Image (cartoon, rainbow, N blue to C red; front, side, top):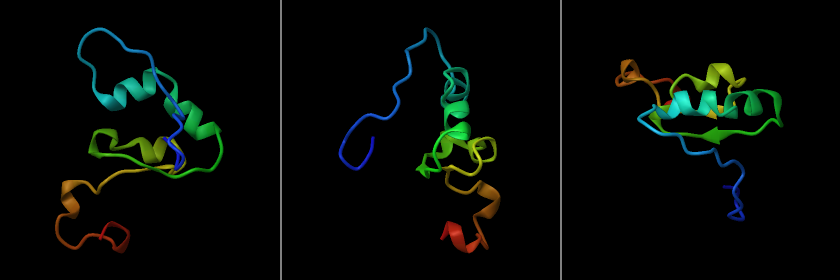
Length: 75
């Protein structure tokens, strides 16, 4: 949603169990973000790895390896 509460993307439901990041890839969200306007999206850890696929448009919490001495952007 944007700051006015409008839904920006809504994917179809799918039967069965599927990881969030896999569903984002299969539904076309990753391509939409990579090819679309330069926006910044804050996502939870379930979307780890999408930043590299979307030109750093998706920002997720740092991986556990940064638990100590995290880069400044992660503090």
